Length: 315
Image (tube, rainbow, N blue to C red; front, side, top):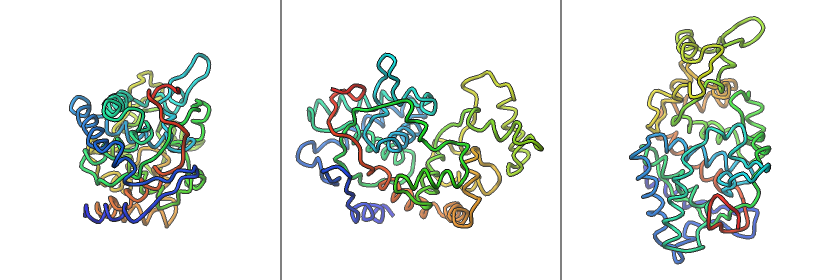
């Protein structure tokens, strides 16, 4: 299967809207040990923190959905000018130090050559692979952006979105329903805070308190974790039963009425998306193949203009 995934990556050349094309061999001559260096940094961080893979995958997704994959999510706020990482949907992002460590190691090998955006794309791939998921060859050659605004995070698809809102958000970035369902599978890694699914377990609408699409026993367990007036900021639940393993458990749980977000449940609201959920629930191989294809597509969204020496600051 690995050979199939590699050939899939090799068969597609992605052109960004900038002058530069992404290429699988972009750093072969200028930084030949780039990928092993990034993988080493990610691997070392996972030893001490099992939540790193989920954090890196989410970080990359949130970066690409705003101004393309340009590492703008890494930039620090300056005074009253709040950056993306301080926007409400991004406050819970973490593990930025992993990219810092990888960048430092890469700079020692190849000063001023590799973008932070490429390092983040590679780290997200490694996060999946090191969690037991598929691997793939990442097209490289992204540039880093100089603009990062907290207000832009309103463009990110929200956990309360319905299928129409999700479809619109993805289509604006050149991604289709297949990509939506496949990339949602990234939820197999990670953690959901109460605030992201409170709408489904308390005051769902005027007539019922709990979203009727939720299995009753599952809803009860969520309510016990997240009471109506929850004051514990860290309270929440894992996204599926195997939270540190990249597998298709997420889709199996959707079909059992155990979705966490409204946006997860939305994948069952159209025949086309529900069919894909069922397909991925029944075949890990089909999910892996679709996820790789959509990740390459999403991570090739065009981005910035420079190579940052410090991923947290523009030159």
